[in-house]
Image (cartoon, rainbow, N blue to C red; front, top):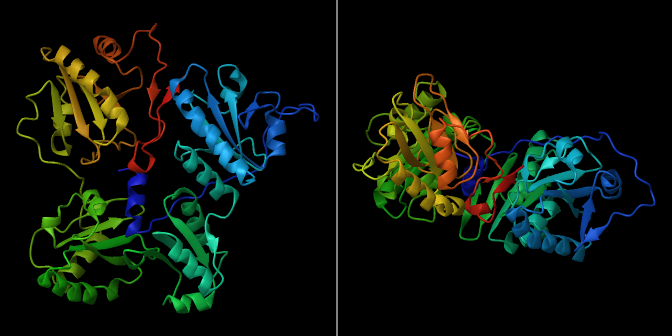
Length: 485
């Protein structure tokens, strides 16, 4: 599963994001100081000659490398201009710029640009370590992404009035309570806040606010208008008890759950998930259905590995404690999500793979297997669905070729993770478990050339086809693929 999916769990479990290092330095050309950087629709137009001038003139700069022939760049252009206008209207420090990649070969080589559009964020004139842009591809999202890097990503809270005003202003507000603002956990919290654009963040070190909100130690608290505040301490292992709190017998479980918690303080964070509330995303992440409650699951927020109790039995305090001890001591193996194998999985031209039959089919040494890893909500997957069906129909009578698909949101693989959708992989016949990733044109003609040539395109075949630059997720559903050089 992708890190973006873990962010969905932030409503219950607040994980941490790594830090990005930024440092000055790097080669610069020497343009004339009196030269002015040209603009188009409020966007700076950069080239090899004036990039250094722009970096010196603007402390924060988002640069889009584009190609005039790239359809995805053309689709991004109006949103990019709108974002520039939004920032200009509020006199924001951040500026937007663009580089014609094919016309500026030296710059595309310097910044390792291999597909369009590619966006990079430059801070404090740092030319050697720009940050890859990973935010939304619509104007409001781009503007907010930049605001959180130019200004504080979390509002500093000094008094109860300010804290309450922030909580009342949004549906979801996350506040970090840290007694020492220089603590490394504060830096991690602020780094997370930079990218969680659908939430508002606050930060305080004031003892009076700790007291007001009943916080005894450094803690992250999530405030939701539709539910009580949720504490998420910085603990790697989270034990989730899935219950339906409207059922009396489930409510009785909470007493035993609470009784088991104290010995694991600092090691395991105990969390209750009400399956009767709006927690479908959490259930889906753990591969559970509401009717399976009560159930226990542990997730390690660093490794994202998930654990389930082995065997049945009532969920008593003793059972909860035994499960925690077993996971912490390494006696329980993590599990991978998998749907059940459909009885008709191989009856259609496109074969249906799930976690339980993937290894058997993909690594069959007598078959050449071409697999599409998709997400049901992915617009790019839907766009190529017809071509994939047509390809399967074309090769349905080839006994040594299998065209298949796997829903990567509902099935996890031990062999490799799937981060973007669609991902296309080819598993050639023979020993060695060889895997070839397909990154060219998504049409039947090019697919066929790839298959007929043993898993590679003929030398003369161009490969300037879009591939998804960012995982196509609900939070970033507007993201478009890039086009390779």
